[in-house]
Length: 163
Image (cartoon, rainbow, N blue to C red):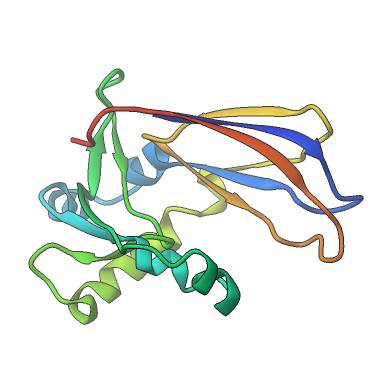
């Protein structure tokens, strides 16, 4: 449903987080694209996230690979608003399609959903607390503080099955 992130230690520069509204991303699409997406189901795989890990991390965290299917467009259970519900880190294809067939449309969505007009950049301070709704928001930590520590504590709240 949601997540909270508390900054315990921040680097002297960088380490911001971008939050993007998936409500706004969906609402900015053309009517034709909305009709196309409304019936699609995305296949998400834990193995895609593993690609960004180092070899040592993959060996250390070797575990079962998971797949989950979710609608590409999710209706928020409380607001009734529609939001895009795919992400570059996990979505691999559409149900009933190959990865190659899915790739062009997914790439369009991945670029579209993080446009500046849908995005807020949050600059952390020690003690800052961010709380966001995972059902309609994506977050992206900016990894631009090489050689410095960034220590965050995260709490994730369980939610409902995407519809």
